[in-house]
Image 1 (tube, rainbow, N blue to C red):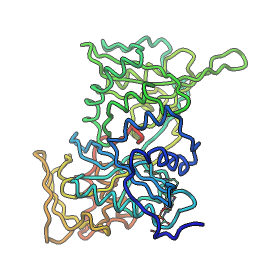
Image 2 (image 1 turned 180 degrees about the vertical axis):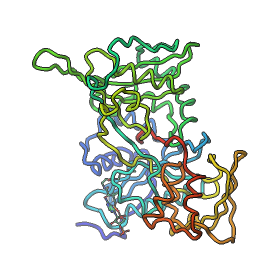
Image 3 (image 1 turned 180 degrees about the horizontal axis):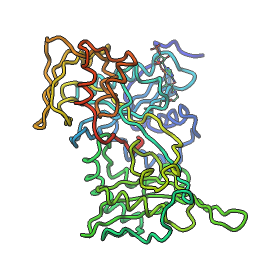
Image 4 (image 1 turned 90 degrees about the vertical axis):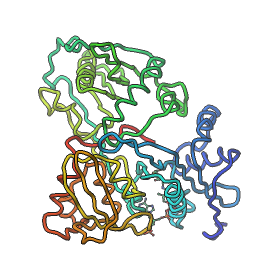
Length: 418
Ligand SMILES: CC(=O)SCCNC(=O)CCNC(=O)[C@H](O)C(C)(C)COP(=O)(O)OP(=O)(O)OC[C@H]1O[C@@H](n2cnc3c(N)ncnc32)[C@H](O)[C@@H]1OP(=O)(O)O
């Protein structure tokens, strides 16, 4: 018989409960609930670095929640402390009794107390997290490229800028990837840090999936020999009826510290003999890829979705920790029904930096903390949110002047899943 909802105990799990907790995660995500020894060993390595909550009905874990320390890049390259949330599940037998709300409230309160500036997550479904003050702060776009239609020069034989591309093995990626990523992440708002476990997991040294397919890895080195780009891709092995190769290369990762490296790696992928299609994987909406092709229509958008969701836990720190392309000021009234942050603030921006201070002056814009999260990394337009009735203009023209401060010339991007 099902217990009454107030009987369900939510608490941090012990390591001995980790296998039962993992089984509950798999059940919630409708995956094979049996955990292999290999997966358990791999996930146990992370036990100390994560915070786990479990809801227990008797001995059975019926809801799961995990968070860990993360750094997310703000506009301008600052590394911001985030409470990254993942593995959120409530078993179907116990849904809609408030278990998610209880776990979320507990975790966000702890993150606030620790002093994290934001919380982050990647939402399985759009309608779940807005009620907790999260808003989508980056978008993810995937393209499929029809190479024969792209108008590329079939004689391409490598970057013409003094740089070179080399196919390497997983060990080289573990050697050069982390340092490259450290450079890249300071350049792009929305990028999150990758630890050693991430690199081992994504190069097959640690395995949580039953089947691992070794991909191809290639590094771009600039004229001075420095590693400036990495692409990881897999290729299917398809042939047409008339003995024509019809392979598709699917990108798992493509990061570059310079535009030259980025252009060279896309050109390389689009020129591999036998490859007639490219699946770009998750990219920023303003990725260079389509416009690198003489016929940009050869790149078709096959997915365009919200990606990194942000919950601002400290308005002052969040707004002061990013840079602004414009100089000006703005008085914002931020509503936060959970009472974690919010209030009225005066934001002043200039090339020297930004200040955000509580004020009693009249507000120029009123908005919810979830909508401030949409604006934080510069991806959303205040004018658009005002047209939707989500942002209220208390002074005519304030939305337009806010856009001049908050928006950015390139769009944020979070390449990773967590
Ligand atoms: C970061 C990540 O890990 S994303 C992965 C999220 N997990 C999944 O999608 C796995 C499958 N789904 C589930 O496990 C559960 O349905 C959850 C975790 C999404 C929700 O858990 P529940 O315990 O049922 O949520 P809870 O009862 O606390 O609901 C809180 C509110 O959210 C609403 N809600 C919950 N899930 C959804 C949903 N999928 N879509 C729309 N609204 C939802 C509830 O109706 C409720 O609304 P109210 O406050 O207006 O009454």
